[in-house]
Amino acid sequence: MLSFPIDGAGPTAGPRELGDIVICPAHTSDLEEAVVHGVLHLCGYDHEHDDGEMLALQQEVLTGLARSTADRRGARHLEEGGATTRTGFVALAGRPNVGKSTLLNRIVGTKVAIVSARPQTTRRAIRGIATGEDWQLVLVDLPGSQRPRDALTERMQRRTERELRDSDAALVLLNGEQAVGPGDRFIAAAVTAAGIPCVVAVNKVDALDHPRTVAALSAAAELELPPEAEIFPISARTGAGVEPLLEALVGLLPEGPYLYPPAEPTDLPAEVRLAELVREQVLARTREELPHAVEVEVDEIEDRPGRALVVHAHLWAESESQKTILVGRGGGMVRAIGTAARQEIQTLTGRRVHLDLTVRVRRNWRRDEALLDRLGIE
Image (tube, rainbow, N blue to C red; front, side):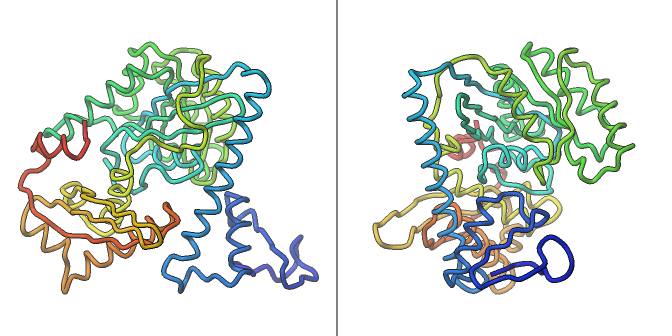
């Protein structure tokens, strides 16, 4: 059961029988996920026509495998008499849209932070938790550093500065496709002022040839950071170079016990995590100022045994004209957002989901301190 062509010359050519699972490395970055995906196809599942059932089951299997692996690691740790572990927080700092959320998800191994090409996607400090044999790294995806314009962006910037001060180390992420600019130098200065060890990663090198990669690494070396800061060329999208980067980050962590259960990928409340998945679909379908003028609030989650998970959520807009766009002609826009978000939530939870999505207006909500408190944007 294949999702890509393999006919022709090459190592995959030759006799094949029904039941064979053929993996093409160029088409998958996660062997475990590819195997589970292929087996489910062999069992008769079809994610193109089953309303999310196959992808939800796939996530359930992968979550179980991850939990089993983490449990074995924990048991082995106890059997060995509690060998020394390294644990700590690493602040992930970079300009908007350099790939911080993509890298966070890559390191954690599951989707924790939403991803969008739009600047200022991350509004909260998102914590992703990666656990190894004798280490646990809590990677904090900081909102992109910026000049505050309102109560929302003031809170985002304060949170960035606070998380940076409280972290054990920092990872400065640069976009290799763009020249180092004032924003990168501002972030480097903030990390240096925090007095914590750091490393630098130049992202998106998969899109660069060798001379451009060398130039990007040279520009990164000129930033005013501690001289011992190592520089790594990586691709958060493909995973290239991420393993040695992760090893360097673990080496910066202090000794200490695990802070979270090994199988836990984030400390985000369920309501916030699901709201972010809905907002991701808003970002994918709206233009100009509208993506920045919309927030999502999950009002209630009904979890009834043996039945679909029911999620009640609000889209907050700042004006009636924005609400009209979000609703769309004949409700088409809000339906499209809801359908895509429901599929993402099903994949995350491994459950059938009913998403009740409404659009409401709250004028100037980005300046509304009370609503920002309720939304958990500190």
